Structures are given as structure tokens and as C-alpha cells.
Length: 244
Image (cartoon, rainbow, N blue to C red; front, side, top):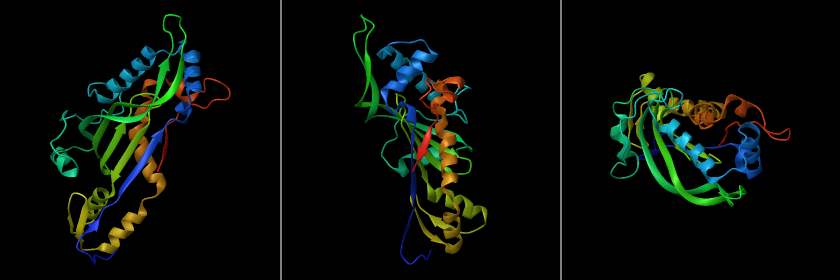
């Protein structure tokens, strides 16, 4: 990696998280019917689960949540966009600390319940809706700054983003290598060959492990039995799958 230009841009790694079981309505009906004796799956049932996910993810006093690795210092939308807007929140961040949570209403695919509540009938269908999603900014102990988006409604889709240049800068400084860094790029490095070696050392399993650790909190709303055993013989358990 030769610095033959004024600026070397950084790389952002994006991973998508999904629960394959919930990509169709039928397994969701089976899950609630088999383990919770709830049929039909009404809008109130779906809203209750969504509220549990939101409470578990955003409540720093909830010791059962996977997100409780630090205190949340802010709960407001910064003025401006991009890395410069969130920069102040990371300056005094502790390892594995959730430094900022931002709420945004954005379009996504969610599971909706349609039917007659009075007659105890209904059906589920996937539809595009604008719903509140939670964006977590985390100072990862080894990975540097990462971003995780949680969609708290069925089918619980997610997105994980790691700014690779923060990871590289951290490891280069640990090795005593001088560099010049901006919010999203490197302006120079005393040992560009070592930078390239470090960048190439990251394997897909490393990235998946980092993403899975943060995204597995999705299934906290389900019991251990629900996560590990299928509701029907032809179904699969409730794992969270991550793909680039």
C-alpha cells in the first residue's frame, strides 16, 4: 500500500443479520402456538414482543441484555450527520461501551397481523412499513468503533458496520507505527506495508464473530428452548445468521 495520493480512503465493512426461521409467516405461527399456546398471533402479541426487544436493548439497568457493557451517555440525535457528529461521543468511551443510541423511523420489512380480533381469527403477512429502528454506536474493545442497527419487529433484521480504519489505526499505534488519520481516511503512515498486512489479516470468520457477538442480543426475547429447538419437525431453531 503506497501513499501515492493525498488521501487513502478507508473501508467500511457491512454485515446483514437475519433469523431465517422468521422470513416466512408460518414458522412464527408455529413458534407461538407450540411454545406459548398463543393462537392466533394478534397485533397485540407482535407489539408485546417488539416492546420486550426494545426494553432489553435500550435499558442500561437490565442485566440480562447483551447490550449492557457500559453506560449510555447520550440519548439524543446529534446536530449534523456523519462521523463528525458522533465524534464527541467516542472521545472518553470505555471499552465495549454503548456511547450513543439514535432512533430513526425508516422503511423496512416487518411481519403484520391481519384479521378479526373479535372472532379470534387472523393471519400474518410480511409488508413494507416505516418503523422505529435503533442505531447503536459502540466502542468495541478490539474492533474499535462499530455501528449496529436493530429492527425490533419480526423478522428482526439487523445491520452491523465496522469502520476498518479505526481497527487498523488502533493496531498500528499498538505497534508504535506513526500515522495521520481523519474521520474516514488515512493521510499517511510510516509503515504502509504493515498496514496492508494488518488489513489482509482479517478473515471472514473474524468479522462474523465480531458481528455475531453484538447481534445475538436479538434472540434474548426467546427462551433457551425456543432458540435451540424447532417448533415443528420440519423447522429449524432460532439462530441469527450473519452475511456480508
